[in-house]
Amino acid sequence: MSEEFFELGELKGKAPKLFGIPTGTRLDEMFWRIEQKGDKFVKVPLGGIPHLAVINITGVPESGKSIFAEQFALVQAGAGYKTLFVTVESPAHFLYTSMKEKAAFLDIDFAEVEKNIVVIDASTNDELRENPKALMDTMAYAIKEKHTTNVVVDSITGLYEHKEIMARQIVRLFFNFLKKWKQTGIFISQKRSSQGSESAEAAGGLAVAHIVDGTIVMDKVLISSRWESKLYNMPLGSVIRTIRIDGCRLTGHDSRTWVFEITPAGTINIIAPLEEFIGGQHE
Image 1 (cartoon, rainbow, N blue to C red):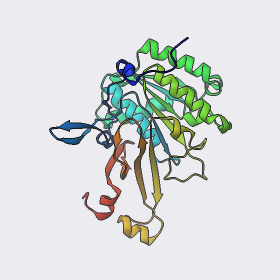
Image 2: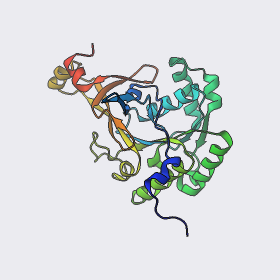
Image 3: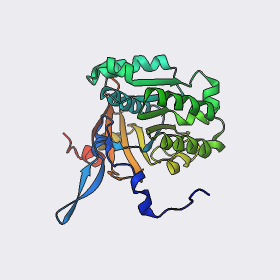
């Protein structure tokens, strides 16, 4: 009979090391570990999302989720780490054009990107999109053959579209798959119109947030009143974008809401905590 319980100490050899996988944004400073220095305990930035974590990115449409995913993949590829990018929403050839422009702006060698990002296009393949086993078999082959260390799925929601009752089951399958193959993962989740833009909830309810290691919520607010215009010191009709680490069970993190912008080149630039932005302290 296989062992069904362990003493905690028996797991020491299997425990992953805690360090950061850079995203190329200020989020890299917002995850930390606690270290003892003398008689004090201090926060030490990880330098990225936790190694081997599966992080869920959720938000309303056009809030910057896919841009974040692409930036993460570019930064990793530019540093020489292979990333498997599973595109479920947009055909793969559009991904190429978008990443080429972003790489130039981020000063990342696109030749490195071309060889270090491996793409599976599930957007135009019904079998991959509708059959989790078929997609995971394809992913496993790519991971093994290309020696990837990171996986992006944009979006996980597209794998249970019109069958949200299966969301928990499908998310759990892919979560366990990434753990088995020792991959650091990014899942992109779509929200339904009835769900609060500021919450971790996405299509399928809170299934994704409950299963993954951490959730990042991205949001946008249209400034449509004079009160909002005065509060944010921005003209009517402007859009203010925010990002927040809703939770992470693997390590400490900054839980404040931060303001960010999408640059003209289509990259994420995190500016300041919301309270400082409103108070003008970031200027």
